[in-house]
Amino acid sequence: MAIIGLVFSTILTSYVSATDRSEWSGYSLAAQSLAVQGMEQARCAKWDPQAWPVVDELGETNFVTVEQLDITASRQTIFATNYISIANIAGTIPMRQIRADCVWSLASRRPATRGPFTNTAVTLRAPDQ
Image (cartoon, rainbow, N blue to C red; front, side, top):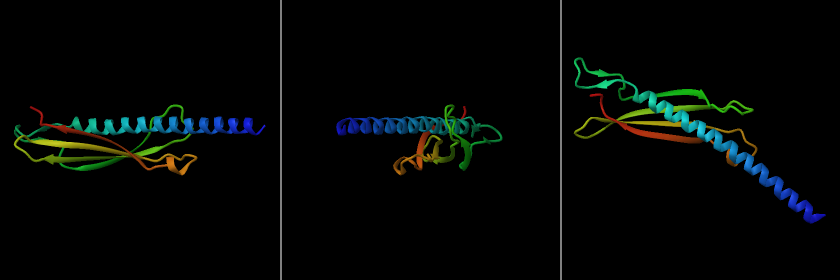
């Protein structure tokens, strides 16, 4: 009876751990998608230093958005904060670095999987020509 109880409790613990990890993976994928979405929005801005007048919708700036993570089979609503930062890169060719950090937390059963977690996407951008 003790062996059966030990095997059953091990199987139950493994099932709960697998469920926690799959839930975390889904939220992490949604947060990475949100970070890439914010980075792509910044890449869409027009930046043409050779035009007259100079067009610079991008600028060297930081901005923050708070959005809901897109998980369809979720029982809870998780909000993530997307920090977008744009910085000039020194050099002969004008370049800017666009960095998106998506910070989110998960209200989980175990404190080790609550967070906060950060998903990051970084790209470089040259001016429109």
